[in-house]
Image (cartoon, rainbow over the protein chains, first blue to last red):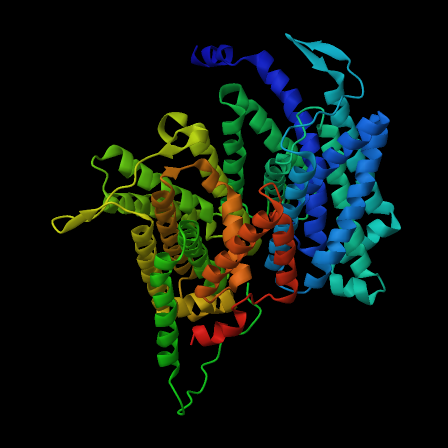
Length: 297
Length: 333
């Protein structure tokens, strides 16, 4: 009797809608976090500026879209430009810090994030910009007209992550990246150009962040503070999923986005964020190596 | 955090003035300048100097963690902000508003929060500690931002400044000079206490944790307990800075709990020189002065954080010891 009363109390239609929403944001988050976890795994750098790269990607998307009107071109150019910017940032700020305390790289990337964020505010102003969706079909999901575009984001993110995974698994450079992640000194001894691998890995992470920025732009406005929210979420995902673990990050991204989506049925979205904070703290206390990795022996 | 080995005790030279005498002489000169400053400076720069001292206190409190224990905290804004809100709570609930109650409330609020944060975050090290403290400060930010009935939400709380009073002795309203002297007294006392702490056996253990944590543990020190006390102590002084800031500006706002404030405290530390206690104050002064100059030269809209961010990164790469790094050894002797 009690159980059925509880079951009737749950708004199942909302739960289903939030499941779809959660998976969509989860895939975006996974795309950001896999770049972050790649960068951490390969060079022990916690990239504070990752959210700003995401934000800059979205802004470049806005600019290119305004001039050319082609969404896919905007996606491509934003990814490319931010990847190049990422390479430049890595060479200018992180390469000199190689071999120093990893904590100094947090400070350096924090400085980079301040610069990028204020540049965006200065260049584009505080008013949020909008990216037009490339197509505007809907389908009916209970009482909602659910846009196809959102599902396409999830699919496209999954495709990018999948391509990235294949690249890591079979590409020559991907193998170099994995080798450097495992043992930097040994990889160098084997003739792998480690500094260049670092730069390329950083550039790839940056490009992935930019791509997710452009994809996510149509869902919310693009403004200069959007990076902050997302970099925090991506941190949480990377820690919960296990630092430097790609699969774990993807699982954690979806897990946390779903939890937040469900929580926002009952509380405001601003407060739903606390759920993921709590998940992070519990993870750090009881399983600091990450929820989605096998128990270390 | 640091890359230099533990400073070795230097052989004391018998010739000339002793290190202590020079230190206290320098201390007295700086104090005298800071005491006289509000009498000669115009109103704007008087307030500016007071704010430098307050931000310096915040940065100094986080130096206890960064410079002496080797933990970077990105959560000091929580302690700072809770100090502000604690003071605001005392000033708004009691009438007439009482300065000492405001101090007590602010300190209690920040200490309780610091104990809570410390209990969880000190189990983790390095990057994980930084991220956890950051997340904790964001939790408090969200709570205070959304709990509008009590905290005023986005608008924060406004209140009147309490009089500077000792019950039964005297009572006078704050003006910008007395405010400056009051802040100066508190910051100086905090500096002397922190200096004493870092040179005490307790402070030595903290520095040994910074240099080699497993070894400190192996010698038999309960590292976790030391870290919790260090975070609490640091949070307490950050809360004190928050109370002072609330008194100076007569408001408490959620913006000050946002983690960018903690980031600025870290920037002050790196610019001034970690592990020196006075360095963070110098760093705060340098940062705020640069910001003021830039906005005077190029207008208010100028994104001053772009050039300052560049300076910050350049300093991390080429001058990791900060502006006062050269004096670090000497100051800690």
